[in-house]
Image 1 (tube, rainbow, N blue to C red):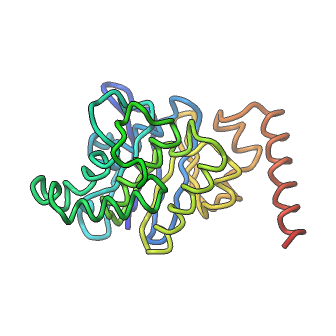
Image 2 (cartoon, rainbow, N blue to C red; image 1 turned 180 degrees about the horizontal axis):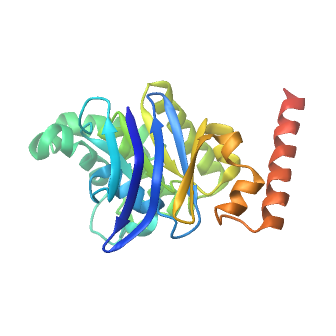
Image 3 (cartoon, rainbow, N blue to C red; image 1 turned 120 degrees about the vertical axis):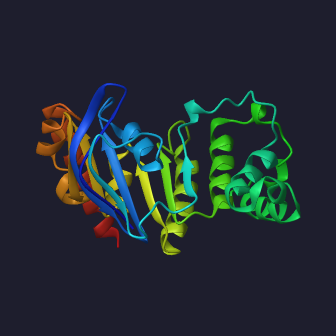
Amino acid sequence: MLHATDLAVGYRAETVARDLTFDVQPGEILAVIGHNGSGKSTLVKTILGIETPRAGALAWTQGRAPQPIGYLGQLTEFDRRFPMRICDLVETGGWSKLGFFDAAGTRARVRASEALDRVGLNDIATLPLHKLSAGQLQRALFARTMVQDAQVIILDEPFAAVDQNTEADLMQHVLTWVGEGRSVIMVLHNLSAVLHHCERTLLLGRGSGRFGPSRAVLNAGALVEMGYLAADQARWLMGSLDGSAEDGRDDA
């Protein structure tokens, strides 16, 4: 689906990460992790076409980027004071495929209603956005992403500012997309979620990246070398995650 070779990304005059080689396939979740400033958001903008690659190649199997690319940005990017209802927000997800006038019609409303039902918000669909909790807003944005009906979906820190129950519910929607053969790229901080749900990981840090199977990439040495964690933090965290994995296997 998407192949990057020796890719360098940056913004303005600064290159923040280089020599990135990775790919993402249909029916796969690719995790992207890294310390603050490592280039995660810049990489996302480059994949979306907002930023231009500084070097290397970013190639799509079809010869060009699929349209639309589903995108769910960080909650901090969203101004919930905007005078809009939940249902209106979700319907905007259909604009790129249906066009503005069709997206304002019956077909879009039906699709939006179905998506809101899937995320458990249909009963409050007419509430204005400023009355929503962080978890409710994230569910609404997930519903909007469903309406986009994209084959490639990018989620930038989709579980930030939501509780564990909401994260678990939203993760099920991501797994449904994967089961439908869609490609999902997720920027995450929760290493446990990465190891449980993402077969492969791109770890960014210190101006470069490491790519491969999540269990191989996310080891204590790599997390320290790439500036993601201090040595004692990395050893403790990976030991804790390995213990959780063992507990899960014992219960199976």
